[in-house]
Length: 209
Image 1 (tube, rainbow, N blue to C red):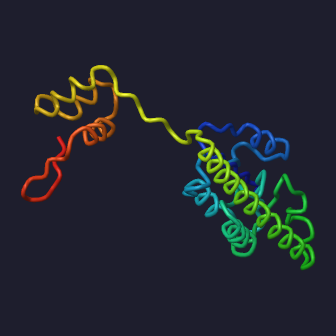
Image 2: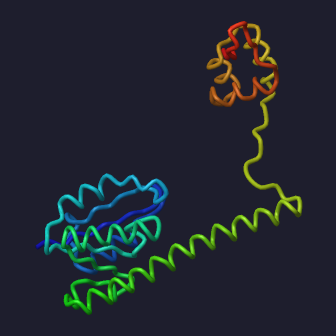
Image 3: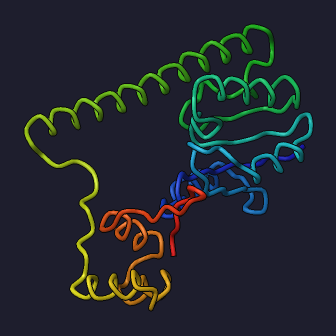
């Protein structure tokens, strides 16, 4: 029987040290620790799926918090079911000692863990929804006060007009024009589209150089 740790951080910039330290203090060997840097929004987690295949009945999976298992209430419950019922492994949630299926393997212990899990998962998802709602309300209130929200439009550089004219006359390709003004090809074409009507030939297809 082996003990594994699964660590997930939401972005490549987020630091996983806090979770790693917690796993070391628990006693999980570094060779059995899986670290995945993947957004919970997309939830495409190849390392987690690989670990899931490796887990055998009687193994233990350690996670720092319950939201490492999923991005919402339903996903967390589904992963818990797969791990405990199908794979028959134990789960230890460090931030919530009640969610430790090594303790109380009888029916009562399992029932308590399942109830606590559902409650915590529901609270976690509700809090995320409240945060999104507060963000939307904050943006709406800021707009009502005349505060700009979102990205500001990029300012065209001084040489843009001259480069645009060369591009318009067919003397520069779109990529070369974009390089000369220091923006991406997509940005240059968007600017150019704003500054001139699209050329529509008889076939009806918009032409972009």
